[in-house]
Length: 265
Ligand code: LIP
Image (tube, rainbow, N blue to C red; front, side):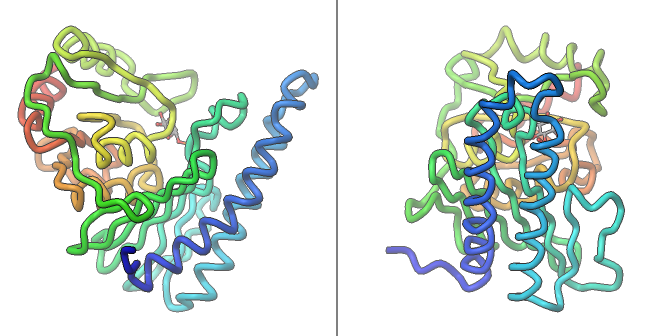
């Protein structure tokens, strides 16, 4: 039995409480697909309710932390705080909206501008991916290690593709896809950046790249991949993968090859 650090226990407790509400709401979404307006407003409310629960629980446990959540619309309370939470209460929103059971809650703790701990909770599979700087990465109680695949032709790579209204450079993403796709065993666009990164840490994906994200999508995944022995680079040389919310995350063996293909596209 792995002894989880106190900070991780705080994050896990908050995620599990918010996850209960989201799981209940997710059960409702299927019935709403046929409604004239569809479940968009219902899902938006579910997202906001989850963030409210997370904010209450995390602030109760660590009152000195600032809070940056995806649903804050600029009300980020992080000014002058040495430590802050970076939260995506529902990552994989479009999956959730369509009743696709692949979404999660992502919580990162940042101290002096560096991510020091991350937790990604998937209520559908009851998997809690977590890591704290220097203590390794875990899925529930199982130690996580990235895959050992070296041959790109055997690798499964995830990414995020453009969609109406996304903040991506569509033409560049299509060039990246054209560069990577023919060299690998498969590409997956699963719809949750946080789970994509958790899967790299777990060795399920050998690599992942995406741009045009929010810091809340990838902050937790960043530390989990690194503590699982993976490498994370910015999309643009000299950038910051977390602050830019545009990154390439892979196992240790294929990193340089994937970075070269994506950056040169
Ligand atoms: C989503 C990411 C996904 C990305 C979408 C969106 P959300 O996060 O997980 O990978 O392609 O643009 O950012 O909006 O579901 O929290």
